[in-house]
View 1: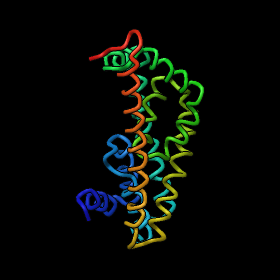
View 2: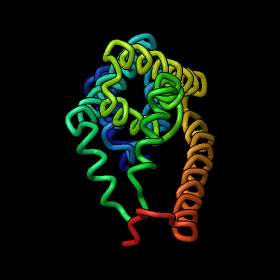
View 3: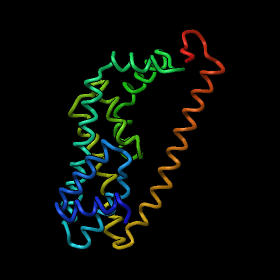
View 4: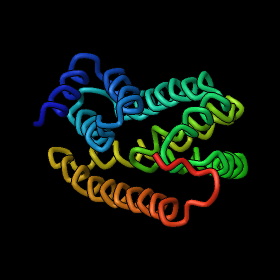
Length: 206
């Protein structure tokens, strides 16, 4: 096992299902901790009798919600005006772009929060704009719980079914994560390219 896998495994051996929940809560706050390792490993631990399968599902989902809620409040504390002020200081970013993004989130925020819980990296970050826009807390919690439950159940059950071969899940999700990151990187490059070659009025150039 790698250092991360050994740490997560030790946490589960010590605390059982609550340990899996703590690991997933931390994964939301620190995305480099990969859920594609934690969740299948929790399923494998359940298959070995270290925890109940239902307990693994409930605790990992609870951990996801707790971690997402913490990031929601980060966004809420920053607030709209402060977020715009910070973003407007970034090179190649215009307030108009921020306002368009805000308008998009107002229209599609519920879908973004729900489906965002199933996209690596973004599954954590999506909670911040939800907090900035002060999405009603019951709505945020409901969508986060449902989206997290679907994601977590798929990977915990995969780890449970594969048993000692649970790491096979990690390799498949790693490929999925790379595709998502490449897509995000291309989107950023396109945005920068448009701003550099077609800056328009009011663009910060440095």
